[in-house]
Structures are given as C-alpha cells and as structure tokens.
Length: 155
Image (cartoon, one colour):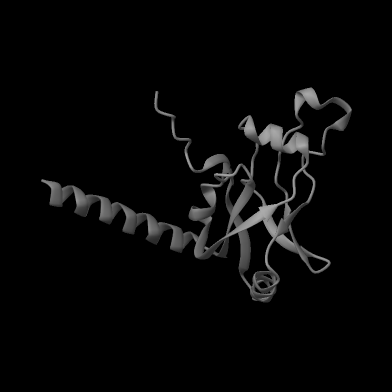
C-alpha cells in the first residue's frame, strides 16, 4: 500500500481579517517560542490571532494579544492564554523590521500560525499599513470587477 502524503502546511490559526484591514506590503516567516501545552492546544485547532500584532519589547520582537486557550489535560503545567510569545528571526531581519516599525502607520500583523513539514510552529507575518474606509471600499470594488471580468471571459 502506498504511503499517504501529509499536507505540507497544517494551519493552526489564520487571520483573514488582516488582509481586509491592512494593505500588505511584505510577508515573511518567523519561528515562535511555545510551551508544550500551547503546542498541544494549537494541534487541536484551538487558537486565535485575530487581534494580535508584533511589537518590540526590550530590543526583541514579541507576538502580543494572541490567544491560545489552556490545554485541558495539562493540569498544573498549563500556560497563560494571552501571554507574550517571542518571535525567532535572523538578526538582519530583526533589525530591518524594527526599523520599519518606527515608521508611522506601519504594523507587524500575523497572517497565519501553522506547523511546517517538520512539525515546527511558524508564524507568517506581514508588514501592513492600515487601510481607511475608502481604501476598503476600493479594494472590494476591484475584487468584484475582477470576478465579473473572469465570469464574462468564461461565457
């Protein structure tokens, strides 16, 4: 019997609202430091990065305001659900991002939290600039026009 291929990326949490609220300029991948109970909870599909963002804390980047619920079977060894989680990046990447964060209107937003092929937790981050209401309407109109155009081409 042939061995079944595992999907290359196993998403634990996604932030779909980020693409609506921010104009995404650049994406990158970062590692994240998690405890054992956090990993178990994420593998169970529980986790929320909807309102989270990355910020500098004493010269390092941390993921703030992300919610990973307590794992039921961990007992005394459970974690705090809304704690700060350190992001792992190369020094050059870190310096570049810290420089970009000093610019007004720029935010580091997590797009997804997933496990890669090797089973290591990663965060897909993006440099985003906040959209105004007008920008959101414009992108919605553009998306609708592209959809109509594609439909007309098929017919």
